[in-house]
Structures are given as C-alpha cells and as structure tokens.
Length: 417
Image (cartoon, rainbow, N blue to C red; front, side, top):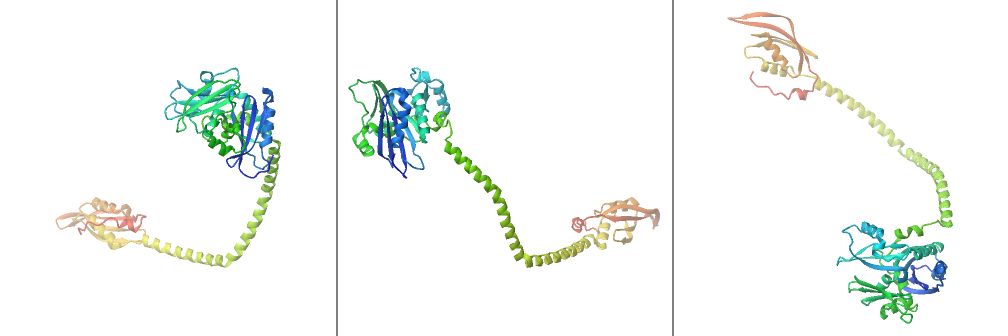
C-alpha cells in the first residue's frame, strides 16, 4: 500500500476463478494484484483483499470501477421493443421483462439502460446480483466509492483496436463485433475447451502502452476505468445505491456531530459579536454626522416654512376669481333680449339683477356657468315694461363652486357679446 496525492482509480474484474484489481494513476497502470477464488463464498474476502492491496493511502479515496466476467454478465441486442422514445421508460420496460430478453438460471439480474444506435438497434446488459452486492459491501468496508459496474466485454472494447473483442471467463467466451465507428454490430456467446486461451486478445500497441509491466490479464480491469460516464451499458450510482449506501461509517457520524456542535456554538456567539461591532460603528458614524445632521434639520425647517407660504399663495390664487371674466361669460349665456342691471361679487359668491322677457332665462343662464353653484331667486319677480315690450326683473344669488382656476378657464366664451 502506497502513499499517494495524485488522481487515482481502481479497476476490478470479477471472474469465475479470480479477482483482479489494478491501480491506475494518470492513465497508466502502476500496481496490480490477483486473488484466486475457491468457491462463491470466498468472493467477498477476495474482493476486500484485492482492494486493500492496491488502494493507496490518501485523504481522498480513489473510486472503484468494476467489470464482471462473461460467466456472471450478459450483453444482448434487443428486438421487438415498444416504440418508446424516453430512455428511462424504455429501461423500465426491459427491467420489467428481464426474462424475455436475458437468460435466467435462478440468480437475480440487474439490467442496465438501453443503448440506442444510429442504425436503430438497441443493446442492454444484465449482471448477476450476488457479485455486485459483494463488490458494494467490499467497497463500503474499505471506505471506497463504487462508481460503475460493466460487463467485461464492454470494458475490453476501448482496449482493443480490432473489429472483434473477445472476453473469456473460465469455459465461457463472448465475442463482440464492432464497426470502425465503435458501434456494436453483433455478439456471440459460447464455450471453450480447457486448453484454449484464458484471456481476451489485445492489440499489442494499446495494451503495451497503457498496461506497462502489469500484464494483459488486467486489461478488463483497466478498461473499466476508461468507460465513458454516459455509457448506457454501465450500472451507475443510482443503480448501485441499494447496496452501496447501506449503513453510515462511524467516522462520518463523528464528523457530522462535531460540525453540528461547532455550528451551534458559532450561531450563539456570532450574533452578539456582530451586534457589538455594529453598535461601535454606528456610534462612530453618528459622531461624524452630527454637524451635517444639525444643518440638515435647519434646512428642513426652512423648506417647510417656504412650502407653507407657497401653499397659502396657491390657495389664494385658486380661490380668486375675476369679476370681468364672470360678467363676460354670464352675458355670453344670457339671451340677446336680456341685460344685466347690477352685479355684486363677494368671496363666497354674489348676486345679479337682470331684465329678461322671462326670469327663467336669466336663471338658466346663471346655472350653466361651471364655477357657479346653488343659484336661487331672491325676492319677488316684478314686471318691468320697457316701451311696448314687457320684461321681468329678477334678482339671483349664487355661490362659487369649489374648483381650481385652471378648471374654470377651460370653457372658452362664445364671443357673442
């Protein structure tokens, strides 16, 4: 076990007879180990031993990327899928019909997302649940984060420059055919004899450059660390959560409790310190603003007195009315055969005396003025002969309407008299 401060990843391959782990730092394999398996019950101790052998000592633990051998993984091209465009809904369809697309021998399966290719074909992977569960338990015991799990044949795909990728696990062989663009073309699964090859084929230049002195038998473990983060055929954090997040390490609880205590103490002490500091700043600020504050108060008083005087002047100006304008508009409203004998204007109103063929004509003319309100006839209406014609003398009183001079002057006289 080495001390390390650089970026590191751990690649793990779980086969039918061995567990292989490789430490990858800055894209190169720097350490590797193999732990052989006697039976299925020894898988968890073997995984724990392999992780301890390659995991570096560091504050930030490396993430684990795993590959499952062909004996516990399947890769299938899916046919007769429903016309569903949503990838999440399509995955739920495959998960709900696992037996329809994958072979089951009584072992629970975990299915990946569906990979859609440009030619319209769809691919999905299925992994046996026991190895994934054991891997998650081993990572949790070693305080390592399990990032992704992928079939070995998919992990070998970026490690090979050939058109065919071969993965062999015991007597099971899987051959994956890919095109020049990296799209999956076909997969074939079979068995090999005991004398056949025991590891997949690799191109010499890729394996030699990346694996260095580690050896080609760790190609699948290394390839798992290079899988794209958006690869649909890989199981991600959400798929591994049921086993990865069971239980909380004790050191996390201690750290969280310590942080809570420190936060509580700070929340109690900081407000008092902050208030004391702000009070000192306020006192210093008030001391500097004293002369300016007194000058501002004097200016405010002067402005208030000036505003009061201006208000009184404006009120007087609004209440003042021109007698000439009043007479001009009144004569404009009176009939042509009527005339005024006297006009009296006061602050609140006034009175007029007029001669007209009918007293109602003078009353109506006074009522039509917009700044006059409550016209009344004062006294009796007396007949007044003028030559051969007969007129009526009437005295009317009125009050000014409460309105502004601007509103009073909006009505233009007709200009007749």
